[in-house]
Image (tube, rainbow, N blue to C red):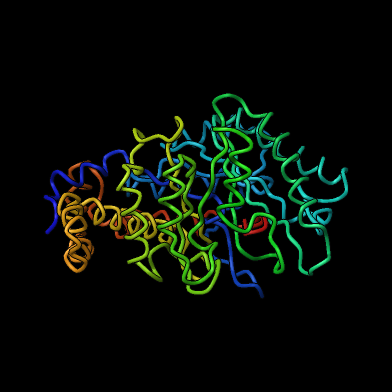
Length: 394
């Protein structure tokens, strides 16, 4: 039992996904980074590639930047370049994991000079937000310890709280801080923001414009991610959602590739509260749905197109759930009946109706085929010769 697609899928009309600039650069394993012909050499070329994803899907109008990887002399010109290509700059991501000073911590470091340096980096990011029109400062904190006794855990939390407070105070009233968490890596004894509860505690202390970022790859195996989604939405603190897929840890694979049913379950909780639409803003802020993936062996732009389409398909299935029937089955204690309502929606093949929707909007029915036929991959491979290709570290 599912809802009629022609009405239920209207919920897709305002849904968008932000793509990451770093997804278009070279990536690889812990052992090497693999190169690909046509990979961007500059942030301007990254934006050009990201615009291809939006052109064929109509779903990806924003591009996240990573600083200093995407540092340019004129961010206003970069924002104009994006606008001319039909996209705009999204979240500004800080980088606290590639500076020698941050070996023992950045925002949590015992050395006041190093903490001040890390805070100043975020003030630079806020200045970039003003130049580009970005409203989101996204922080993933790689700080942590490898050994018990290496540092005082309480002291690290106190220093982190003070550092975050200084950064938050520098934000404009129309800007917010998005705080990510990760249960391990690069450190293994204790990460300083290892879970959603720690992130939420810091965000609550900062204020309403501080919200949690949930990355699907940043949890221990077996974690019920949809439960976390529900709780963060319940208290109005789910600020952003990083989509990717994993088998073991932070694999950063194409979203939905490892466990498409998990993706559907997560989006079910999003749809339950209408969180997929901008009109359901929490504390005045909508959830920013993003991709956070590195394409190690697959082509970059098609990898992003496939990811966007996978999220759209999972969301479409979640929108087809008959929630009245689901509630009635739960109220009656009909365990299998309630589960069947979910499975009916999940088992529905929505690819045809989504292709119809794209065609009605003047978009290609098959975005991946359209991109392959566009001539763009051949053109960038021929033109982008010389210079230094962008990679996960630049």
